[in-house]
Length: 131
Image (cartoon, rainbow, N blue to C red; front, side, top):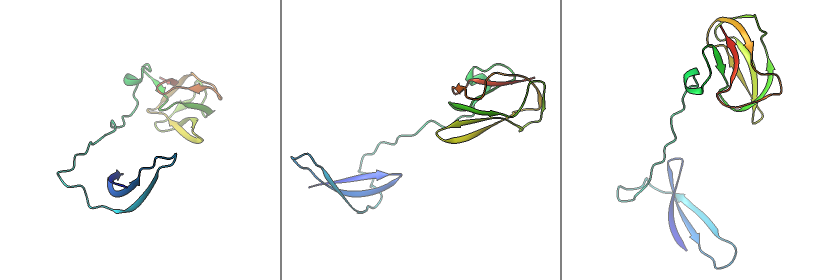
C-alpha cells in the first residue's frame, strides 16, 4: 500500500493505493485531508482567461458577426435588408446538443447572411454582415 495525497478542485484527499503485480490496481479514498502544508510541492495549472470573440481577434471583417464556437447552424431569424436592433437574435447554433443564440452586437441593417441552416461553422467564422 502506498499513501498519496490527491487534490481535486482545490480539495486535498489522502488516498491509499494498493500496487498489484496483477492486472488490476485498486484505490481507496479514506478522508479529506487538511490543506497541504508549505513543505508539500504543488504545481498550479491555470487555464487562459476566456475572451470575448471580436472581429479583430477572429479575422471577421467590419460589420461581420463571428461565431463564438464551432457548431451547426440550426436556424436564421433574420433576412437580408432587415433592420435589426442591438441584442436582437440573429442565428441559432447547435454544439454538443445545446443551442447557442447569436445576437446582433449593434443596431443596423442585415447586409448579407453568410451561412445556411445545416452548415457546419468554425469558431470565429463570419455568420452575418450588418452595416
